[in-house]
Length: 398
View 1 (cartoon, rainbow, N blue to C red):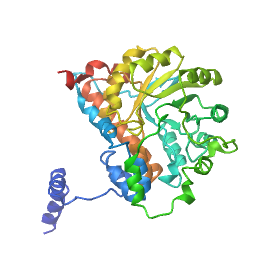
View 2 (cartoon, rainbow, N blue to C red):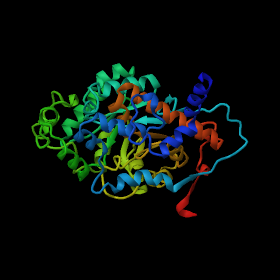
View 3 (cartoon, helix red, strand yellow):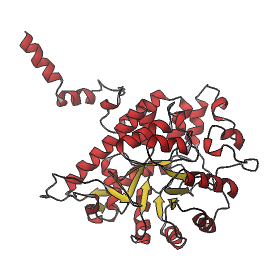
View 4 (tube, rainbow, N blue to C red):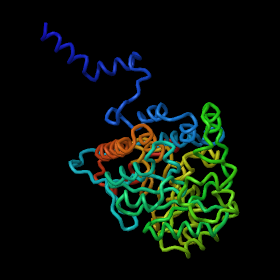
């Protein structure tokens, strides 16, 4: 009897039986209760949804208008198929990259995301600890809920710094100089929100939330009240500031910003070859292809589909980074094959943060790194430098 019981337990534990149970719906609705249970980063999404109030998850999940660009960011990766090579010695896979003189173990970058304490009490501190533990690139947002000096202390080195300019250049200059004094090596200027965005999913989610949010978030129509929990604005004269954005920003501002700081300057939000060429003319040090995770404009163009024309315009003269829709190691690989120097993620690590704090962020990085190593081996690319355009084909052109 004991032998039969052990045999039955063994059979029930086999992957095929577990798969059968899932196909039959026996595990439908199951949500991971620890980071170790995640099979891929998408497992963290529902865990984050369960952990967060509706308005907070809505802020994280929203796109703009009918979310068409948000959807296209994911669907765009399906356009590119992998061309894999065989009979290559893949016992050693090197996922490291060097960017602006610093070598990182993977090309995965934690892209800027504001208000992280809306997702977890430790916010950016938990994210910084995870980045330090995994030695990953981290970009801190202007509207983060932790000051740059504290993040640098936790991270063990200054992070890259993302800038929202506001319409008052004096405010932007003060923030840039503070980031520079903190030792930040790279300034990432976001340029894709000058016209604002129509985040309907966020508004609908907020209507489902019965809590009184003003005590924490402040009045969005009163800028000083809105940023009172954003420490990078502490001590600044905000009497004439009404918005994070500078509607009158032109390429002339890039020149002024270039003259203001010794930090490397990356412009985030470029999606065309024309703007990439203008950036090169103005002396930018890098470009990040991005549509703000589908939150900036209702273009219907995915970031990954915009990447090739920007790479073609740059011609290897400066690094090109990309973010938007990355959920798997194969996505990272495709972006690298199309010419990206590094690949940003935001929603996946924020799901991990919301669900489990620092261990959740670490697990997301571990999964994506593991998946990237696997697809590199499958493709016969033993280092990132060996990943090329020949490793992908464009289904739309076949």
